[in-house]
Length: 366
Image (cartoon, rainbow, N blue to C red; front, top):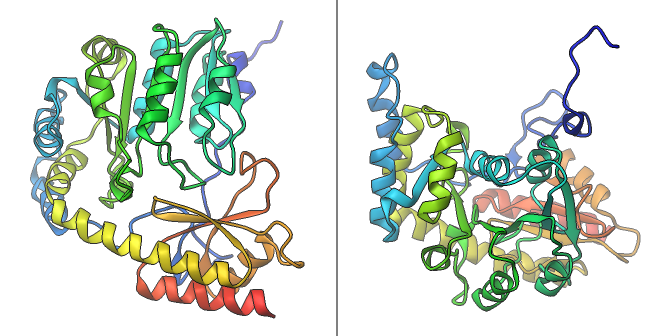
C-alpha cells in the first residue's frame, strides 16, 4: 500500500494543457497570432470600468453577478436569471461536465474539439467519444450515430476551433431532436460575435424552448478580456439551478465583471471589429488560394491553412518561416483534422495580416 497521496485515476490520464507560444526563443514576437486574441485590444469603456474599481479591491465581488448578468440580458434580449457567469466560458463547460457526468459516462465531441472539454471529462472518470468530420465541418449524422445509453453531454463548438467552420441552425435542431432528453447539448459560442453568415445562430432561442441545452459565450475574443478570464452561459432554469449549486460564490472577479459589463454594451465596437475580420478573412483566403494552398472557410477570427499535397511545402515549414520574421502562428497537433497538415493563424490588424501574407508568399513561391 502506497504511503503517498494517490490521485484520482482519471486525473492521471490527463496530459497537461499546452497553450500557444508567446515568445520565439527568448524574444517577444512582432505579432502574436497563436491564441486568437483580439487584434484591437479592449474597448475603452471596459478599460475605464476596470480602472474604476481599484479602490475596491479589498471588497469581495458580487457573488450574484447581478450587474453583468443584467448587461448581457439587456444587450442580447435574454432572461437575466438564466445567465451564469464564470472564470472564462471554460469554467462553465467544466461545471456542466462535473454536474451532469459521472465515472463511466460518455462525453461526445466532434473530431476537432476544445481540449479542455476532454480534460474535465477524464477528471470525473468519464469516457471521451469523438465523431469524424466532413471537410473540417461537424457531421451531425456522425455524432448521432455515436450516441449510446451512456452519453450524458454533447459539446459542439460553433464556430469550431481550429477549423473556423460552423453548423447552421437546421443542423443544430436536427442534432438536438436526435438526442435523448436526458443528454445535455452544450453549444460553445466563444467566437459567435465574429460570424457574419446570415444563417448562423448561437443557440439562445433553442435554450429558451428546451430543458437540456446550454449556450456558452466568452469575453476573451471579441471583447479583448482574455487576461481577466470572464465568460457566461445561458441555460434553462433547471440547469441553472444545478450549476449554481457547484459554482463557487466568487468565481468571477470584480474587475472582470465591471469591464465585461461595459464591453458587452459597446456593440459599435463589435460591428467595427467584425467588419475588419470579415474583410481580411476574404482577402487572406483569396490570396493564399491563389498561391496553391487550401484555406478552410472560416467565420471566426482565425483561419486554418491545409498543406496536404503542397509540393514539398508544409505547416511546419510555414510556421518556421513566420517565426523567423517574428510572427507566431499556432501549429495544430492532436485533433487537428484527421492527419491533415495544417496551420492555424489568428486574424490580426492590417500590418500583421500584410506581414503574414508577405512571408507566406515568399515561402510558398521559393
